[in-house]
Image 1 (cartoon, rainbow, N blue to C red):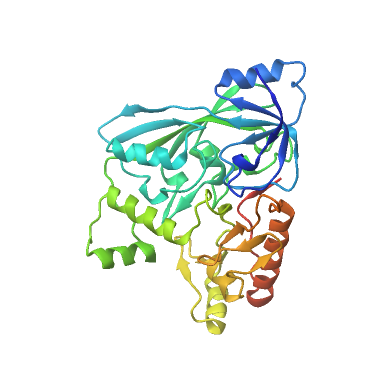
Image 2: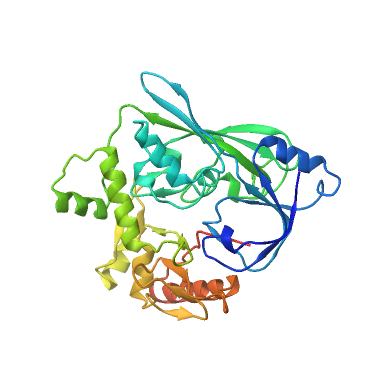
Length: 350
């Protein structure tokens, strides 16, 4: 198959960071991966899997062979009296897939509307929004082992899902442990959408929409529309302002830690979790430290949402990954010095 050389990556990462892939292959099937693995020129070359580039900060040219996942296809695998099992190719746009499921009359993914990226990348990050995480709807996935070329299937319990975490973000410490970072290329993902659908409405922004509209029992399409409107109002369109979405994870603390912060900052935004811990709004912490709208070099903090870092560069002076990470580290220092909380970045840094 064709391997392209010196490919600009600016169109392939939503932050719009200027960098190049020294070599790039477009993966449209499992056979494409296997063909590369037996090709003499590429069999032992290090590889980097690229989806939609929406959760990525590139700090320099990528020397590894970039495998750009472009596996397409959406289908209903099975329907029972209890629900629908649906599948999408790893290269499908996530938001487009969510909209498609609703068009078919299969609710369940609506709270995760407008999350950027591809279906194949969604399990890696265990994406989530407005009270629903991917793991809540996940059934199984197919992938290719980039060391052996063999295909394999994983169910939810094997994916090690956590908050914005999965087995795909961890390197195996030894032959006995199960880490798949840099080793798996996800080709297809399946989701179980129960027919006994219930709306998930526990977030303040959704409660405000119910108050504004007077709609107390929204259907899935209404929730989808609300989430799209909320996200568009809060988050910049990557096609207009380069960004990687929410840059930091919302930290979790003990009730005692939260009470201590509330004693000093009563307005801190926090949410109780099912396990007894408290989730703090990272955007509020950053805003409280005065970062909203600030810039460092050609990287900045979005003026409408402090959780989002944005590209302030232009064609002549493009934003670099180094500038983004310098800003991110400065924010982490500020939040730690004021609240004693260590913010953890969401994007993959390469």
